Amino acid sequence: MPRHPAATVKCRPQARASSPAAATSPYTGAPLADLPVSTPGDVEDAFARARAAQVGWAATTVADRKRIMLRFHDLVLQRQEEALDLMQAESGKTRRDAFLEVSDIAITARYYARSARRLLSPKRRKGAIPVLTHTTELHHPKGVVTVISPWNYPLSMAAGDALPALMAGNAVVQKPDTQTALTALWALDLMREAGLPADVWQMVVGRGSSIGDALMAGGDYMMFTGSTASGRRIARDAGERLIGASLELGGKNAMVVLADADIEKAAAGAVGACFPSAGQLCVSIERLYVADEIHDAFVTAFVERTRAMRLGAAYDFSMDMGSLTTPSQLETASSHVDDAVAKGATVLAGGKARPDLGPLFYEPTILADVTPDMTLFDRETFGPVVSIYRYRSVDEAVAMANATPYGLNGSVWGRNGAEARKVAGRLHVGTVTVNEAFAAAWGSIDAPMDGMGDSGLGRRHGADGLLKYTEAQTVAHQRLQGFTPPRGVKYEQWARILTRAFKTLRALGVR
Image (cartoon, rainbow, N blue to C red; front, side, top):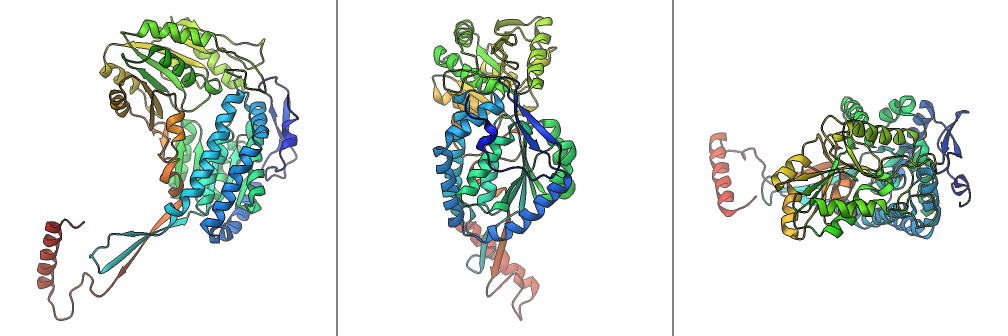
Protein backbone atom coordinates (compact mmCIF):
# COMPACT_ATOMS: atom_id res chain seq x y z
CA MET A 1 0.00 0.00 0.00
CA PRO A 2 1.22 3.57 -0.70
CA ARG A 3 1.96 6.06 2.04
CA HIS A 4 -0.89 7.02 4.35
CA PRO A 5 -3.54 8.92 2.31
CA ALA A 6 -3.90 11.77 4.80
CA ALA A 7 -0.22 12.63 4.33
CA THR A 8 -0.89 13.53 0.70
CA VAL A 9 -3.42 16.27 1.48
CA LYS A 10 -2.59 19.72 2.85
CA CYS A 11 -6.03 21.36 2.91
CA ARG A 12 -8.50 20.68 5.69
CA PRO A 13 -12.22 21.37 5.89
CA GLN A 14 -13.50 24.63 7.35
CA ALA A 15 -14.28 23.42 10.88
CA ARG A 16 -13.67 24.25 14.51
CA ALA A 17 -15.42 21.26 16.09
CA SER A 18 -13.39 19.02 18.36
CA SER A 19 -15.18 15.75 17.53
CA PRO A 20 -13.76 14.34 14.27
CA ALA A 21 -15.46 12.10 11.71
CA ALA A 22 -13.62 8.92 10.79
CA ALA A 23 -13.10 7.49 7.31
CA THR A 24 -12.13 3.82 6.99
CA SER A 25 -10.52 1.72 4.30
CA PRO A 26 -13.01 -0.38 2.29
CA TYR A 27 -10.20 -2.80 1.46
CA THR A 28 -9.35 -3.57 5.09
CA GLY A 29 -11.69 -1.76 7.46
CA ALA A 30 -8.70 0.03 9.01
CA PRO A 31 -8.91 3.77 9.86
CA LEU A 32 -7.86 6.15 7.10
CA ALA A 33 -8.31 9.61 8.56
CA ASP A 34 -10.08 11.66 11.19
CA LEU A 35 -11.56 14.81 9.68
CA PRO A 36 -12.82 17.80 11.66
CA VAL A 37 -16.58 18.14 11.43
CA SER A 38 -18.05 21.49 10.41
CA THR A 39 -20.84 23.10 12.38
CA PRO A 40 -23.61 25.24 10.88
CA GLY A 41 -21.61 28.24 12.09
CA ASP A 42 -18.54 27.01 10.21
CA VAL A 43 -20.66 26.73 7.06
CA GLU A 44 -21.94 30.28 7.52
CA ASP A 45 -18.36 31.51 7.93
CA ALA A 46 -17.31 29.66 4.77
CA PHE A 47 -20.10 31.34 2.80
CA ALA A 48 -19.18 34.76 4.18
CA ARG A 49 -15.56 34.35 3.10
CA ALA A 50 -16.58 32.91 -0.25
CA ARG A 51 -18.97 35.78 -0.92
CA ALA A 52 -16.28 38.33 -0.15
CA ALA A 53 -13.75 36.55 -2.35
CA GLN A 54 -16.20 36.07 -5.23
CA VAL A 55 -16.30 39.78 -6.01
CA GLY A 56 -12.62 39.85 -6.84
CA TRP A 57 -12.74 36.49 -8.61
CA ALA A 58 -15.61 37.61 -10.86
CA ALA A 59 -13.57 40.70 -11.75
CA THR A 60 -10.71 38.59 -13.12
CA THR A 61 -10.66 38.04 -16.85
CA VAL A 62 -11.71 34.75 -18.38
CA ALA A 63 -8.17 34.51 -19.73
CA ASP A 64 -6.78 34.64 -16.17
CA ARG A 65 -9.20 31.92 -15.04
CA LYS A 66 -8.25 29.86 -18.09
CA ARG A 67 -4.56 29.95 -17.16
CA ILE A 68 -5.34 28.69 -13.65
CA MET A 69 -7.62 25.96 -14.99
CA LEU A 70 -5.05 24.70 -17.50
CA ARG A 71 -2.38 24.71 -14.79
CA PHE A 72 -4.74 22.60 -12.66
CA HIS A 73 -5.18 20.26 -15.66
CA ASP A 74 -1.42 19.80 -15.87
CA LEU A 75 -1.04 19.21 -12.13
CA VAL A 76 -3.74 16.53 -12.13
CA LEU A 77 -1.91 14.61 -14.83
CA GLN A 78 1.53 15.14 -13.29
CA ARG A 79 0.45 14.03 -9.82
CA GLN A 80 -2.11 11.44 -10.77
CA GLU A 81 -0.42 8.71 -8.70
CA GLU A 82 -1.42 10.61 -5.56
CA ALA A 83 -5.01 10.81 -6.74
CA LEU A 84 -5.14 7.15 -7.74
CA ASP A 85 -3.85 6.07 -4.33
CA LEU A 86 -6.33 8.32 -2.55
CA MET A 87 -9.34 7.16 -4.56
CA GLN A 88 -8.50 3.51 -4.09
CA ALA A 89 -7.86 3.93 -0.37
CA GLU A 90 -11.11 5.82 0.20
CA SER A 91 -13.52 4.09 -2.21
CA GLY A 92 -12.08 0.60 -2.71
CA LYS A 93 -12.30 0.85 -6.49
CA THR A 94 -9.69 -0.53 -8.86
CA ARG A 95 -6.89 1.58 -10.22
CA ARG A 96 -8.47 1.28 -13.67
CA ASP A 97 -11.67 2.89 -12.43
CA ALA A 98 -9.74 5.54 -10.53
CA PHE A 99 -7.80 6.45 -13.67
CA LEU A 100 -11.07 7.12 -15.48
CA GLU A 101 -11.70 9.88 -12.93
CA VAL A 102 -8.29 11.41 -13.58
CA SER A 103 -9.06 11.35 -17.30
CA ASP A 104 -12.49 12.84 -16.74
CA ILE A 105 -11.19 15.78 -14.73
CA ALA A 106 -8.42 16.50 -17.23
CA ILE A 107 -11.01 16.60 -20.03
CA THR A 108 -13.39 18.74 -17.97
CA ALA A 109 -10.73 21.27 -16.98
CA ARG A 110 -9.45 21.60 -20.54
CA TYR A 111 -12.92 21.88 -22.07
CA TYR A 112 -14.18 24.66 -19.81
CA ALA A 113 -10.85 26.48 -19.83
CA ARG A 114 -11.01 26.69 -23.61
CA SER A 115 -14.78 27.10 -24.00
CA ALA A 116 -15.59 29.65 -21.30
CA ARG A 117 -14.72 32.72 -23.35
CA ARG A 118 -17.03 31.64 -26.16
CA LEU A 119 -19.83 30.70 -23.77
CA LEU A 120 -19.61 33.78 -21.55
CA SER A 121 -18.92 36.49 -24.11
CA PRO A 122 -21.74 38.94 -24.94
CA LYS A 123 -23.98 37.67 -27.74
CA ARG A 124 -25.87 39.81 -30.25
CA ARG A 125 -29.52 38.74 -30.45
CA LYS A 126 -32.25 39.64 -32.91
CA GLY A 127 -33.87 42.91 -31.85
CA ALA A 128 -37.56 43.66 -31.66
CA ILE A 129 -37.33 46.02 -34.64
CA PRO A 130 -34.66 45.21 -37.24
CA VAL A 131 -31.85 47.78 -37.31
CA LEU A 132 -33.53 49.97 -34.69
CA THR A 133 -33.23 47.57 -31.72
CA HIS A 134 -29.72 46.58 -30.62
CA THR A 135 -30.06 43.54 -28.29
CA THR A 136 -27.27 41.84 -26.36
CA GLU A 137 -27.29 38.78 -24.10
CA LEU A 138 -24.92 38.90 -21.11
CA HIS A 139 -24.07 36.25 -18.51
CA HIS A 140 -23.21 37.09 -14.91
CA PRO A 141 -22.05 34.61 -12.26
CA LYS A 142 -24.70 33.47 -9.78
CA GLY A 143 -22.45 34.35 -6.83
CA VAL A 144 -21.69 31.46 -4.47
CA VAL A 145 -22.54 27.93 -5.63
CA THR A 146 -23.21 25.11 -3.16
CA VAL A 147 -21.90 21.73 -4.33
CA ILE A 148 -22.81 18.54 -2.47
CA SER A 149 -20.85 15.64 -3.94
CA PRO A 150 -21.09 11.88 -3.29
CA TRP A 151 -18.58 9.22 -2.25
CA ASN A 152 -18.68 6.96 -5.29
CA TYR A 153 -16.70 9.13 -7.74
CA PRO A 154 -14.82 11.42 -5.36
CA LEU A 155 -12.72 13.27 -7.96
CA SER A 156 -15.13 13.38 -10.89
CA MET A 157 -18.11 14.50 -8.84
CA ALA A 158 -16.24 16.91 -6.56
CA ALA A 159 -13.94 18.72 -8.98
CA GLY A 160 -16.07 18.09 -12.06
CA ASP A 161 -18.99 20.13 -10.74
CA ALA A 162 -16.87 22.86 -9.16
CA LEU A 163 -14.69 23.62 -12.21
CA PRO A 164 -17.38 25.12 -14.50
CA ALA A 165 -18.85 27.08 -11.58
CA LEU A 166 -15.42 28.59 -10.94
CA MET A 167 -14.80 29.30 -14.63
CA ALA A 168 -18.11 31.19 -14.73
CA GLY A 169 -16.83 33.53 -12.00
CA ASN A 170 -18.54 32.00 -8.99
CA ALA A 171 -17.15 31.02 -5.62
CA VAL A 172 -17.91 27.49 -4.38
CA VAL A 173 -18.69 26.08 -0.95
CA GLN A 174 -18.63 22.29 -1.17
CA LYS A 175 -19.55 19.40 1.06
CA PRO A 176 -17.92 16.19 -0.13
CA ASP A 177 -18.93 12.94 1.51
CA THR A 178 -16.81 12.32 4.61
CA GLN A 179 -15.75 8.86 3.40
CA THR A 180 -14.01 10.31 0.33
CA ALA A 181 -13.28 13.87 1.45
CA LEU A 182 -9.51 13.44 1.14
CA THR A 183 -9.75 13.14 -2.64
CA ALA A 184 -11.87 16.30 -2.85
CA LEU A 185 -9.41 18.14 -0.59
CA TRP A 186 -6.55 16.95 -2.80
CA ALA A 187 -8.27 18.58 -5.80
CA LEU A 188 -8.62 21.77 -3.77
CA ASP A 189 -4.90 21.61 -2.94
CA LEU A 190 -4.03 21.46 -6.62
CA MET A 191 -6.39 24.24 -7.61
CA ARG A 192 -4.89 26.56 -5.03
CA GLU A 193 -1.42 25.57 -6.18
CA ALA A 194 -2.53 26.42 -9.71
CA GLY A 195 -3.34 29.96 -8.56
CA LEU A 196 -6.95 29.98 -7.33
CA PRO A 197 -7.39 32.47 -4.44
CA ALA A 198 -7.81 30.58 -1.16
CA ASP A 199 -11.36 31.60 -0.23
CA VAL A 200 -12.90 31.15 -3.68
CA TRP A 201 -13.33 27.37 -3.26
CA GLN A 202 -13.92 26.02 0.23
CA MET A 203 -14.82 22.67 1.74
CA VAL A 204 -16.91 21.74 4.74
CA VAL A 205 -17.52 18.26 6.14
CA GLY A 206 -20.50 16.97 8.08
CA ARG A 207 -23.78 15.12 7.93
CA GLY A 208 -26.60 16.61 5.92
CA SER A 209 -28.86 16.44 8.97
CA SER A 210 -26.45 18.82 10.75
CA ILE A 211 -25.26 21.27 8.13
CA GLY A 212 -27.69 20.74 5.25
CA ASP A 213 -29.87 23.70 6.15
CA ALA A 214 -26.85 26.01 6.32
CA LEU A 215 -25.64 24.76 2.93
CA MET A 216 -29.02 25.49 1.40
CA ALA A 217 -29.38 28.86 3.08
CA GLY A 218 -25.96 30.18 2.08
CA GLY A 219 -25.76 29.51 -1.65
CA ASP A 220 -27.16 31.18 -4.75
CA TYR A 221 -27.37 27.86 -6.64
CA MET A 222 -27.37 24.21 -5.57
CA MET A 223 -25.51 21.40 -7.36
CA PHE A 224 -26.35 18.04 -5.81
CA THR A 225 -25.55 14.44 -6.68
CA GLY A 226 -27.18 11.74 -4.58
CA SER A 227 -30.40 9.91 -3.90
CA THR A 228 -33.75 10.78 -5.43
CA ALA A 229 -35.30 11.17 -1.96
CA SER A 230 -32.69 13.74 -0.94
CA GLY A 231 -32.97 15.44 -4.32
CA ARG A 232 -36.69 15.97 -3.84
CA ARG A 233 -36.09 17.72 -0.51
CA ILE A 234 -33.38 19.90 -2.02
CA ALA A 235 -35.61 20.82 -4.98
CA ARG A 236 -38.39 21.79 -2.56
CA ASP A 237 -36.06 23.92 -0.44
CA ALA A 238 -34.47 25.54 -3.50
CA GLY A 239 -37.96 26.38 -4.74
CA GLU A 240 -38.79 28.05 -1.44
CA ARG A 241 -35.69 30.21 -1.82
CA LEU A 242 -36.28 30.80 -5.55
CA ILE A 243 -32.77 29.66 -6.44
CA GLY A 244 -31.77 27.23 -9.16
CA ALA A 245 -30.75 23.63 -8.59
CA SER A 246 -29.16 20.91 -10.68
CA LEU A 247 -29.73 17.40 -9.38
CA GLU A 248 -28.25 14.11 -10.56
CA LEU A 249 -30.21 11.42 -8.74
CA GLY A 250 -30.84 7.68 -8.92
CA GLY A 251 -31.09 5.36 -11.88
CA LYS A 252 -32.03 1.86 -12.96
CA ASN A 253 -30.19 1.90 -16.25
CA ALA A 254 -30.93 -0.52 -19.08
CA MET A 255 -28.82 -2.02 -21.86
CA VAL A 256 -30.55 -3.31 -25.00
CA VAL A 257 -28.73 -5.94 -27.07
CA LEU A 258 -30.24 -6.07 -30.57
CA ALA A 259 -30.55 -9.23 -32.62
CA ASP A 260 -27.72 -8.25 -34.98
CA ALA A 261 -25.23 -7.40 -32.20
CA ASP A 262 -21.74 -8.87 -32.18
CA ILE A 263 -22.19 -11.27 -29.27
CA GLU A 264 -18.61 -11.30 -28.01
CA LYS A 265 -18.26 -7.52 -28.19
CA ALA A 266 -21.62 -6.99 -26.54
CA ALA A 267 -20.77 -9.45 -23.76
CA ALA A 268 -17.47 -7.68 -23.11
CA GLY A 269 -19.32 -4.36 -23.23
CA ALA A 270 -21.84 -5.60 -20.68
CA VAL A 271 -19.05 -6.43 -18.24
CA GLY A 272 -17.70 -2.91 -18.67
CA ALA A 273 -21.19 -1.44 -18.31
CA CYS A 274 -22.33 -3.34 -15.21
CA PHE A 275 -19.32 -3.69 -12.93
CA PRO A 276 -17.11 -0.56 -12.95
CA SER A 277 -16.44 0.64 -9.40
CA ALA A 278 -18.28 -2.50 -8.22
CA GLY A 279 -21.47 -1.17 -9.81
CA GLN A 280 -21.36 1.99 -7.70
CA LEU A 281 -21.64 4.26 -10.72
CA CYS A 282 -24.68 6.39 -11.46
CA VAL A 283 -24.64 5.43 -15.14
CA SER A 284 -23.81 1.72 -14.76
CA ILE A 285 -26.22 -0.90 -16.11
CA GLU A 286 -28.50 -2.90 -13.79
CA ARG A 287 -30.94 -4.29 -16.40
CA LEU A 288 -30.02 -6.19 -19.57
CA TYR A 289 -32.55 -6.84 -22.37
CA VAL A 290 -31.35 -9.32 -25.01
CA ALA A 291 -33.03 -10.30 -28.28
CA ASP A 292 -34.52 -13.79 -28.20
CA GLU A 293 -32.51 -14.84 -31.28
CA ILE A 294 -29.15 -14.39 -29.53
CA HIS A 295 -30.18 -14.56 -25.86
CA ASP A 296 -28.68 -17.93 -24.97
CA ALA A 297 -25.39 -17.33 -26.79
CA PHE A 298 -25.05 -13.89 -25.27
CA VAL A 299 -25.77 -15.13 -21.74
CA THR A 300 -23.15 -17.86 -22.11
CA ALA A 301 -20.52 -15.34 -23.24
CA PHE A 302 -21.48 -12.78 -20.59
CA VAL A 303 -21.46 -15.30 -17.75
CA GLU A 304 -18.11 -16.69 -18.85
CA ARG A 305 -16.52 -13.24 -18.91
CA THR A 306 -18.06 -12.28 -15.58
CA ARG A 307 -16.84 -15.42 -13.82
CA ALA A 308 -13.35 -14.77 -15.17
CA MET A 309 -13.11 -11.30 -13.63
CA ARG A 310 -10.26 -10.74 -11.18
CA LEU A 311 -11.65 -9.47 -7.91
CA GLY A 312 -9.39 -8.06 -5.22
CA ALA A 313 -7.45 -5.22 -3.60
CA ALA A 314 -4.33 -4.06 -5.40
CA TYR A 315 -2.72 -0.65 -5.87
CA ASP A 316 -1.93 -1.40 -9.51
CA PHE A 317 -3.89 -2.10 -12.70
CA SER A 318 -4.17 -5.86 -12.22
CA MET A 319 -7.73 -6.14 -10.88
CA ASP A 320 -10.98 -6.03 -12.84
CA MET A 321 -13.21 -5.14 -9.88
CA GLY A 322 -12.59 -3.84 -6.40
CA SER A 323 -14.59 -3.51 -3.23
CA LEU A 324 -17.86 -1.88 -2.31
CA THR A 325 -17.26 1.33 -0.38
CA THR A 326 -19.51 1.20 2.67
CA PRO A 327 -21.16 -1.47 4.81
CA SER A 328 -24.58 -0.14 3.81
CA GLN A 329 -23.82 -0.82 0.14
CA LEU A 330 -22.78 -4.37 0.95
CA GLU A 331 -26.00 -4.82 2.90
CA THR A 332 -28.07 -3.49 0.00
CA ALA A 333 -26.43 -5.74 -2.59
CA SER A 334 -26.69 -8.79 -0.34
CA SER A 335 -30.32 -8.17 0.61
CA HIS A 336 -31.39 -7.51 -2.98
CA VAL A 337 -29.80 -10.74 -4.22
CA ASP A 338 -31.05 -12.80 -1.27
CA ASP A 339 -34.58 -11.49 -1.75
CA ALA A 340 -34.53 -12.30 -5.45
CA VAL A 341 -33.17 -15.81 -4.94
CA ALA A 342 -35.73 -16.52 -2.21
CA LYS A 343 -38.49 -15.55 -4.67
CA GLY A 344 -37.21 -17.72 -7.51
CA ALA A 345 -34.42 -15.84 -9.32
CA THR A 346 -31.57 -17.89 -10.77
CA VAL A 347 -27.97 -16.94 -10.02
CA LEU A 348 -25.92 -17.28 -13.21
CA ALA A 349 -22.71 -15.81 -11.76
CA GLY A 350 -21.58 -14.51 -8.38
CA GLY A 351 -24.24 -14.00 -5.76
CA LYS A 352 -22.28 -13.81 -2.54
CA ALA A 353 -19.96 -11.68 -0.45
CA ARG A 354 -16.23 -12.42 -0.36
CA PRO A 355 -14.95 -11.70 3.15
CA ASP A 356 -11.83 -13.69 2.30
CA LEU A 357 -10.79 -10.76 0.08
CA GLY A 358 -11.86 -7.95 2.41
CA PRO A 359 -14.79 -6.82 4.54
CA LEU A 360 -16.81 -5.22 1.71
CA PHE A 361 -16.15 -7.36 -1.35
CA TYR A 362 -19.11 -8.81 -3.26
CA GLU A 363 -18.90 -10.92 -6.39
CA PRO A 364 -20.06 -9.55 -9.75
CA THR A 365 -23.52 -11.06 -10.00
CA ILE A 366 -25.87 -11.95 -12.87
CA LEU A 367 -29.47 -12.96 -12.16
CA ALA A 368 -32.10 -14.46 -14.44
CA ASP A 369 -35.82 -15.13 -13.89
CA VAL A 370 -36.25 -11.82 -12.05
CA THR A 371 -39.90 -10.88 -11.54
CA PRO A 372 -41.69 -7.67 -10.47
CA ASP A 373 -42.22 -8.88 -6.90
CA MET A 374 -38.46 -8.86 -6.28
CA THR A 375 -36.93 -5.75 -4.72
CA LEU A 376 -34.20 -5.31 -7.34
CA PHE A 377 -36.64 -5.54 -10.24
CA ASP A 378 -37.23 -1.79 -10.17
CA ARG A 379 -35.14 -0.45 -7.26
CA GLU A 380 -31.59 0.74 -7.68
CA THR A 381 -29.04 -1.65 -6.15
CA PHE A 382 -25.96 0.50 -6.78
CA GLY A 383 -23.77 -2.55 -6.61
CA PRO A 384 -22.32 -5.27 -8.86
CA VAL A 385 -25.69 -6.89 -9.60
CA VAL A 386 -27.48 -7.08 -12.96
CA SER A 387 -30.68 -8.85 -14.01
CA ILE A 388 -31.07 -10.20 -17.53
CA TYR A 389 -34.25 -10.55 -19.61
CA ARG A 390 -35.13 -11.73 -23.12
CA TYR A 391 -37.38 -9.88 -25.55
CA ARG A 392 -39.05 -10.78 -28.84
CA SER A 393 -39.43 -7.39 -30.54
CA VAL A 394 -37.64 -4.06 -30.39
CA ASP A 395 -40.90 -2.41 -29.33
CA GLU A 396 -41.06 -4.80 -26.36
CA ALA A 397 -37.44 -4.07 -25.44
CA VAL A 398 -38.00 -0.32 -25.55
CA ALA A 399 -41.17 -0.60 -23.48
CA MET A 400 -39.41 -2.68 -20.82
CA ALA A 401 -36.39 -0.40 -20.74
CA ASN A 402 -38.67 2.64 -20.28
CA ALA A 403 -40.85 1.00 -17.62
CA THR A 404 -39.22 2.90 -14.75
CA PRO A 405 -39.60 6.37 -13.24
CA TYR A 406 -35.85 6.81 -13.66
CA GLY A 407 -34.23 8.12 -16.82
CA LEU A 408 -30.49 8.55 -16.42
CA ASN A 409 -28.52 6.41 -18.87
CA GLY A 410 -28.83 3.60 -21.39
CA SER A 411 -26.79 1.51 -23.78
CA VAL A 412 -27.70 -0.10 -27.12
CA TRP A 413 -25.66 -2.70 -29.02
CA GLY A 414 -26.07 -3.65 -32.68
CA ARG A 415 -24.06 -4.00 -35.89
CA ASN A 416 -26.34 -1.63 -37.81
CA GLY A 417 -25.34 1.69 -36.30
CA ALA A 418 -28.22 3.65 -37.82
CA GLU A 419 -30.81 1.23 -36.44
CA ALA A 420 -29.11 1.14 -33.04
CA ARG A 421 -29.19 4.94 -32.89
CA LYS A 422 -32.91 4.90 -33.69
CA VAL A 423 -33.50 2.59 -30.74
CA ALA A 424 -31.29 4.80 -28.58
CA GLY A 425 -33.43 7.80 -29.42
CA ARG A 426 -36.53 5.98 -28.15
CA LEU A 427 -35.13 5.41 -24.66
CA HIS A 428 -36.39 7.88 -22.06
CA VAL A 429 -32.99 8.72 -20.62
CA GLY A 430 -30.59 11.66 -20.63
CA THR A 431 -27.72 9.82 -22.32
CA VAL A 432 -27.44 6.68 -24.44
CA THR A 433 -24.24 5.11 -25.72
CA VAL A 434 -24.25 2.87 -28.79
CA ASN A 435 -21.80 -0.05 -28.82
CA GLU A 436 -20.03 1.15 -25.68
CA ALA A 437 -20.80 1.08 -21.98
CA PHE A 438 -21.09 4.74 -20.97
CA ALA A 439 -17.73 6.46 -21.38
CA ALA A 440 -18.42 7.66 -24.93
CA ALA A 441 -21.44 9.70 -23.82
CA TRP A 442 -19.92 10.83 -20.53
CA GLY A 443 -16.63 11.75 -22.21
CA SER A 444 -18.37 13.73 -24.99
CA ILE A 445 -18.19 16.70 -22.69
CA ASP A 446 -19.34 19.18 -25.33
CA ALA A 447 -22.77 17.50 -25.08
CA PRO A 448 -25.12 17.74 -22.06
CA MET A 449 -25.37 14.89 -19.58
CA ASP A 450 -27.80 13.92 -16.79
CA GLY A 451 -31.23 12.48 -16.31
CA MET A 452 -34.95 12.68 -16.90
CA GLY A 453 -37.78 11.84 -14.55
CA ASP A 454 -36.72 10.65 -11.10
CA SER A 455 -33.09 10.79 -12.20
CA GLY A 456 -32.95 14.53 -11.71
CA LEU A 457 -33.07 18.06 -13.06
CA GLY A 458 -30.61 20.12 -15.05
CA ARG A 459 -27.53 19.14 -17.00
CA ARG A 460 -23.80 18.99 -16.49
CA HIS A 461 -21.28 19.14 -19.35
CA GLY A 462 -21.54 21.21 -22.50
CA ALA A 463 -22.76 24.79 -22.56
CA ASP A 464 -25.48 23.99 -20.02
CA GLY A 465 -22.87 22.74 -17.57
CA LEU A 466 -21.37 26.23 -17.33
CA LEU A 467 -24.26 28.55 -18.17
CA LYS A 468 -26.47 27.06 -15.43
CA TYR A 469 -24.09 28.78 -13.00
CA THR A 470 -24.87 32.18 -14.56
CA GLU A 471 -27.71 34.66 -14.68
CA ALA A 472 -28.66 35.62 -18.22
CA GLN A 473 -29.36 39.30 -18.81
CA THR A 474 -30.82 41.01 -21.87
CA VAL A 475 -29.77 44.57 -22.69
CA ALA A 476 -31.94 46.10 -25.45
CA HIS A 477 -31.04 49.53 -26.80
CA GLN A 478 -33.83 51.11 -28.80
CA ARG A 479 -32.69 53.75 -31.30
CA LEU A 480 -34.64 56.41 -33.25
CA GLN A 481 -38.15 54.96 -33.29
CA GLY A 482 -39.81 52.54 -30.85
CA PHE A 483 -43.28 51.01 -30.59
CA THR A 484 -45.10 54.21 -29.72
CA PRO A 485 -46.26 56.41 -32.61
CA PRO A 486 -44.14 59.40 -33.60
CA ARG A 487 -45.48 62.86 -32.89
CA GLY A 488 -48.47 63.72 -35.01
CA VAL A 489 -49.38 60.09 -35.86
CA LYS A 490 -52.55 58.67 -34.35
CA TYR A 491 -52.48 55.24 -32.67
CA GLU A 492 -54.96 53.78 -35.19
CA GLN A 493 -52.75 54.87 -38.09
CA TRP A 494 -49.61 53.68 -36.30
CA ALA A 495 -51.18 50.24 -35.69
CA ARG A 496 -51.90 49.92 -39.44
CA ILE A 497 -48.32 50.91 -40.27
CA LEU A 498 -46.90 48.33 -37.88
CA THR A 499 -49.28 45.65 -39.17
CA ARG A 500 -48.09 46.22 -42.74
CA ALA A 501 -44.48 46.15 -41.52
CA PHE A 502 -45.01 42.82 -39.73
CA LYS A 503 -46.56 41.31 -42.88
CA THR A 504 -43.65 42.53 -44.97
CA LEU A 505 -41.11 41.06 -42.53
CA ARG A 506 -43.04 37.78 -42.62
CA ALA A 507 -42.95 37.74 -46.42
CA LEU A 508 -39.19 38.48 -46.40
CA GLY A 509 -38.52 35.62 -43.99
CA VAL A 510 -37.20 37.89 -41.26
CA ARG A 511 -37.24 36.37 -37.76
